[in-house]
Image 1: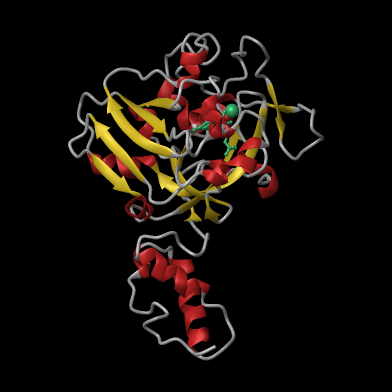
Image 2: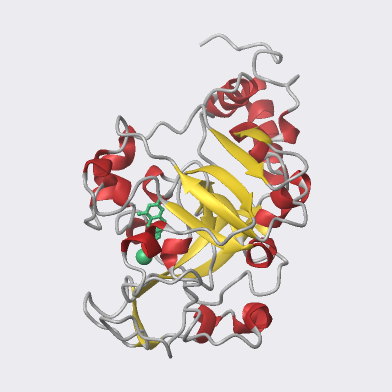
Length: 329
Ligand SMILES: Nc1nc2c(c(=O)[nH]1)N[C@H]1C(S)=C(S)[C@@H](COP(=O)(O)O)O[C@H]1N2
Ligand SMILES: [Mo]
């Protein structure tokens, strides 16, 4: 194979803008070795060229620096990546846990953009590449507790949603944030079912959305998000039941009135707006006092006590001071 020129390998591209420093350094090292005539693959350099042209990167790597946000690194053992990518809730691809891994390959994640609008000084449409370089990528190891009674521990890669919110300058009428996710029948076979009103909509109070633990995630386990986990970007709100963590976001809207989430719309008695993880407020049809950690103790064991605010009480308890959490469930 002829040796490509340095320029063709991407040396002249300003890749440091979109690539985390460690990865960038590793790529440069690879490129040097390739230039020196070794048999190393040029996948990395092809990736740089593809990214510069706005196409999908040839590498899935997405590395984040360990987050310094208080509470961002759970000490629990991370769930096996095989479990986190094969046991999913993503109803747009079917309601069985195995459906998303099987069907989400039809999701087209590029080109992708997110409309950020409503009560802000700077509304606009954000392209995925601009979002990827908006703030430094961090690794956050969060517990995720599904309302169904199971939990996982996932090393996400992303940055605080607050980074984006600050840039669009919400005005004084922006009391809540509404999140809307993709609903495209051509890509999502689950939309044929009426289990929810599509698109999937979720909401947060503005102070919840601004909390540093509220994550805009682009990756997990050191790679871009798998489609079944909500590629190319999703919300992760670790102290709330998993359904608040909306996948494959297409719109973030700042509003004055409390949004109606898809789950509240479907069953208001069962899924309130707040949806904070709370072992003392049972779901009308089952207890929320304990949970089964996926990958532990056999499939039907439910032995871990569920923690108030999923274990994030020290960080987020103040947001709900004085509120009756049985009423605002
Ligand atoms: N768009 C969309 N987002 C969604 C869902 C969904 O069905 N559609 N399911 C939610 C639920 S109930 C949970 S528990 C988490 C699961 O995320 P994971 O599959 O990455 O673990 O995604 C949430 N986000
Ligand atoms: Mo869930």
